[in-house]
Structures are given as C-alpha cells and as structure tokens.
Length: 216
Image 1 (cartoon, rainbow, N blue to C red):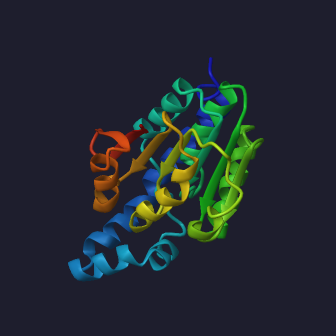
Image 2: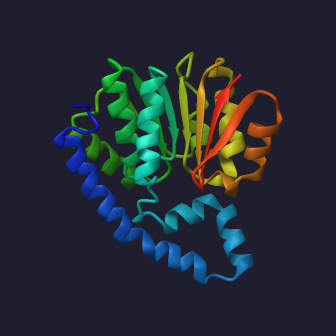
Image 3: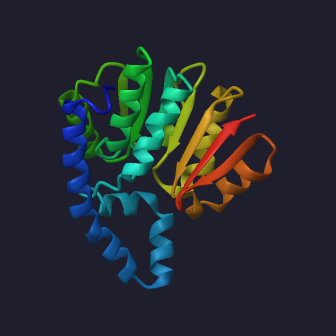
C-alpha cells in the first residue's frame, strides 16, 4: 500500500477526476467554438483565459498523475515546484510521492485565489497538506523568490505561453538529474526547442501531450 493508493487519497482522486471530466467539457467546447484568431488571442492572454476557466479543473490525466508519482518516487525527490495547481489533482500525486519518500517540500502556484483555496482543502482532506505551499498570483512573481536551493522535479501545467519564462526562473535551481515534466508541451514550441535542442536536457515525449526531460 502506498499513500497514493490508500483509500483516503484514492477515493478523493476518483471524485476529483470525475468532477474534472464533467466540468472541463464546457471550456473545451467554448474554445473549439471560437474563431481561430480569437482562440489564438485568448491562449496568449493567460489572465483572461484563466479567469474564464476559474470553475474548470484543467487537470492532468490519470496517466499523467501516475507518471508524476512514479517520477517523483523513482528520483527520490525532496523538493518539487509546480506551475499551475488548479484544484490540486496533480499536487495530490506529487505530495503523495513526497510523503512516501519520507517528506519534503512542494511549492505550488495558482493564479486564481478560489482555486488555491480549493486545492488547499483537498490536500487537507487527503492528509497531505504538510510541506505543501500554494502561492497565489502570477507565477512570474511568486516563483521569483524563496525557492529551494535545489529543485528535484518541476511540473509545468499552467499558461503554456509562460513555460519558457518559468523554466528560466527555475533553471538556476536545477542540478544534473533534475526532472522537468511539461503538460500539453506541444502548445509551447519555444519550450520544446529549449528542451530538445539546447544540449542542456535529454527530452522525450510521453503519450500525446506530455514532455519529460532530465537536466544534463
């Protein structure tokens, strides 16, 4: 039995994934209905996009959640930074891995205060709030200070247009062997060029929408 598969955490995740499936269809339909130019404009204006999606989970998939747990456990991660917490589905997977690694620190970020509040409540319900800090507001500001000296794993799952800038903020804390997981990485060509072409990372796609990279 692991923390992730305990009844307390597993039942909560089952409920959250079901809610995510039910609520996220509408935002996907809304975006699909927009004219291409308007959709491109909205995707570039992350404050407007995430204000529009304040009731939507925008969560990682079950497979990606399991991957996050697997990577954090196998690397024995002790310090994790998450860009884009939303209601905390990915956070729960990462916090469970830290608990099973013997403890550690997880810094999450969330633009929408109401989502941060829900995420904290979910962590408390799961019994995984210890060692987890969720910072509210723009991550370009919240991740510019007071970071762990060494970050073992980064999850990029917020505004795709910010992926390269968030990675640049965190890179001074990434030693060889640190992992970077980017959800929906295909929406950030600049990030993929950095991960695949700079020589600083070894990077491979996972399934259709996740990029997994290791700092060299």
